Image 1: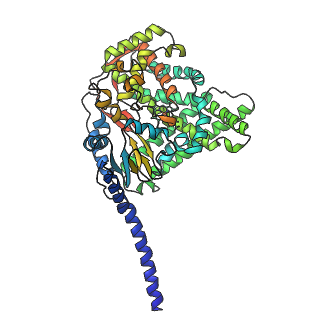
Image 2: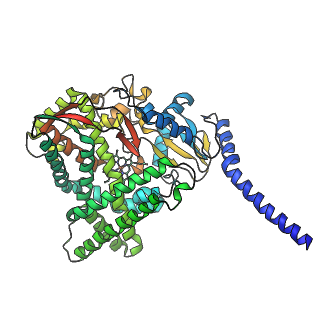
Length: 516
Ligand code: HEM
């Protein structure tokens, strides 16, 4: 009896010690081993700190930077990415930091960046973070390997230039609605202060609702309002709590997030069901993103004569949700920074307006004319360099990988600091922090000398699928704005770029609009 009790106690103690060892290994010994491995290869980095890695310092530095606006300068990396900026400045352009227990290897060598972005099977999108972020966006951004090839092939036709032409009327209507609101504000006086940021957000959101769902625009708008609420709740959850596990409890916020997710899925499904019925009756439009996607999916299934080859309805729901998250905020941001920069650099605003008036006069902008806007093109290039909406690109390796002369352990995160690369003196020259659109006048590859150092839309096979869509939309909006208004910075404008997923003006974009 006693012997049985002793063996039972020994058994339980062994299991207990085994788990303690596994936890300690995961949280301490393994990261410390990785740290030594990276250091022994000559890479400098921050020392690993228990469980959190650099998370606490990152949050602290970000909060400190966010506490006050900066003076008007385009040298924004120290405010936007204070921790990564400091790490790269003090440890070198190639270094490592810690995201919890995972090493983050920062890569800035253009040849290695090219290799990472080209090999999408080896260097995959990071996984295993907060499961709540899955509610935000899945679809194309969240698949790998053959699945990604299949998704991208079916979705690609929706973004062909030929198809995008049909979306231009939706860009025009959404922008007219925004301009009407500004004209109403200015109806009493010739000039008025307007925070243009919320208007540009609504504009880019309406564009996606219209172009994604066509005639079901109003239903689409409601869906995207819910998605915006969901986005806010998710960011709050990710930012406010960093005690592992706590964010997954059934709190009021967490419950609301799941509720919205279900509502959004049900509503999109109902739009799709109606559309499929209309398609079968030969009455459906093929000119909006959903129509093109369903058509392309149907073709793929028919060609392969097997339902397994196409996307499921669940997949299509996720792609529709993704269009909103990937396309709304990014394009709104690009436009808001363009307006802020043109308000500050009035000579470029005048040159852009001159071009728009020369091409269109005061008539409605059309696709052919938009493709002739060269000054606006170089202005966008420079805005996307200085104020890139996506400030970092991340990849993860699942097996030990050789990158140049480094051996990177499985589970490492690879980080390409787009914003910091775009502000690197060694690449762009002494005037790196000046707004000089003319640097792009001979094209992007001329200024970058063909190197992979300019990545506002990412690069390689997984480059942004919506870049032509975004640029056409932004050109239409800017052309229409320049036809009607001139603008300058208001005294109440505070320069405070910061990231909430993408790069935004923290205190809005207060401009003085003048009726022309
Ligand atoms: C100025 C506007 C935009 C910017 C700056 C931007 C930026 C980016 C970047 C940097 C990536 C690559 C991410 C990575 O490699 O990890 C990306 C991917 C993507 N973007 Fe955009 N984007 C914009 C507009 C849009 C629009 C309008 C849409 C759709 C309506 C869109 C849909 C997507 C999708 C689906 C992907 C994933 C592609 C894939 O993984 O194959 N984006 N975007």
